Image 1 (cartoon, chains in turn cyan, yellow):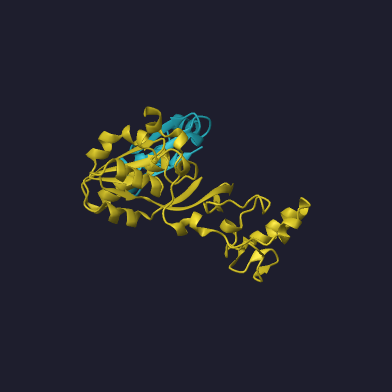
Image 2 (tube, rainbow over the protein chains, first blue to last red):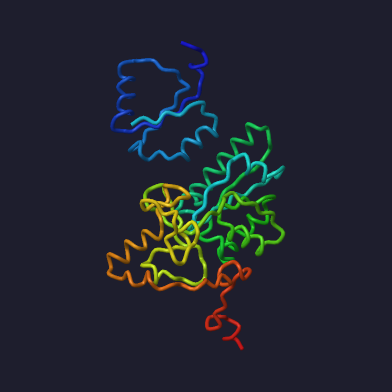
Length: 68
Length: 227
């Protein structure tokens, strides 16, 4: 894997009912992903406002994923 | 409502100059509901400016606050300390808001973050249109509730003109001919006779042509009660 990708700070806003459950399943399956990926569980991805995305970038995120 | 839109970020950065402490001040009334300068937009603007400053290598402290109405001093007084503490106040209020801050806090340097554009309303989500020109002498009672001052490109009092084509204005085919709308409306209400009344030249002194306007209501002025 590209080392830049491995060290990129990625913030993930994940819906509890689908994307977060999928991430959980990935963990259960022992699938690997870089430790610089931070997953935040939300009751619904619809909660994510542009403000949260900007806050993530302000705090040093290289990328933001909204998954739901 | 007063409808406004944000200035480009580059212009705002220029207006801020070399200020170290910036207060982005939102307004909770008209510009909130037209998504130009409310609490959310103020927070986004502050965040954008913080990131822009970081990219530009400029040291800046940028905070945001929002008051219910920038055009009333009582609300501005609630953030007096923050206004005085800032090198520059970036107002996301309309032009009235900017001037209200300047008048209340002469020591503050205030710059506009919005271009105040017109009095209007949303006709669909994300689309605002002009509906009132504040001419000071309302004639909507004669025109079926459709304003030719705000909506006719020529502000005709006795329209339509020859530039009305298929219900559209010759200035731009996306503009409805106000006088066609007026005709259709009056016809549907059986009041076409109103069209036959020739309107005399309008007294534009009641609009901007008589200089800055003001309204004085002696019945609600406080000093009269005190006397």
